[in-house]
Length: 110
Image (cartoon, rainbow, N blue to C red; front, side):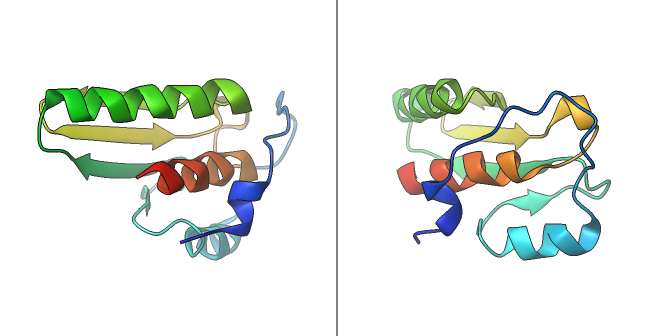
């Protein structure tokens, strides 16, 4: 699924910017299927399954390239047959459009 967000670039966010409201989060959530907004509204998470460790690692390496290109880095947990990605904007203590841009780009490689 192509999202308008995947065409955007992350903008630097140094803090002092308001985090997205719960209403805004719902709008963005529709653009990133399979991502879960955590209960506190401060992060989004996606769990993925793979057939083996190498496939998980290959996916993580692709995510790393996106993160570096966007200068917006998710937390990644992975092992044999799985990967869990958590994205948030630490500097504002919540979620920003950048988080959803990265999530959208990750969806395109999955």
